[in-house]
Length: 299
Image 1: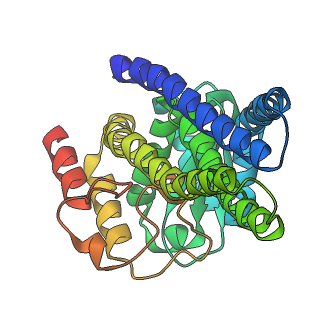
Image 2: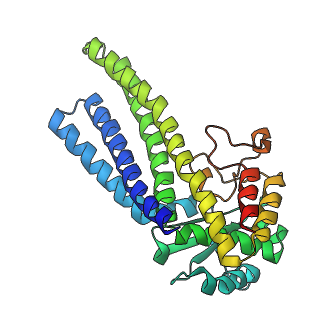
Image 3: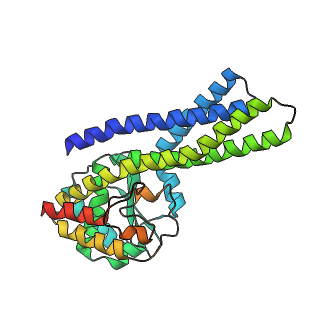
């Protein structure tokens, strides 16, 4: 497990660097398309990518909580959740107690976020609190504590925000090229065509590459968090039962989107694909069957 945590940290550095490079290149081409000179375009691209990285590092949890419309949990309203977390703190090995948040939604689901274990957050839906038994809820919370303990939360949170930035910048880039091309008939047509082709390619591949990165990150980390949860609770059956309930629940999570889907313990999107025994190429989560099989081997 310690070797996996070490690999997570190394992989995190490479993936974040890759995102920074992609954002820098996109903003550079955008600046060039808007008639900035080469040196100025480079400066704009570097400054924007650095600011984006810092913003993602320090504010990714706030952005995610805002997007999911989460509210802070209270002892009066969410006593069951608070008691479960308190009971797991000693066995989890965490030095700092994660903050608790709740999303008012019928779908039972949960995620963890934050930049490190000292600034971590566990968020659950009201559907999760209402539909799971105590030992099942314990398994889910332990799973999210596993993400915190294994240093998954920083990378998944930063990647979630950066994927959103990539889609937004790519869309802005393509729109600016077509707008500029329609206005300037006297400009260098060849240059416009090249820039429009580059913009179209970036618009297409950026979301796809972001999805692939999310997929590569999420699958392995879900298995690791599941095994950590079994270690914390000493009861793999609790998480197994919870995963079965979460997978069979028909409700859609209203605030979920493609950028945040990889954060959740199970995919927030409900469709026929979720019934497959094996995960598809672009699925952010391993199949429930594979996860249950892995947990059963721990028992």
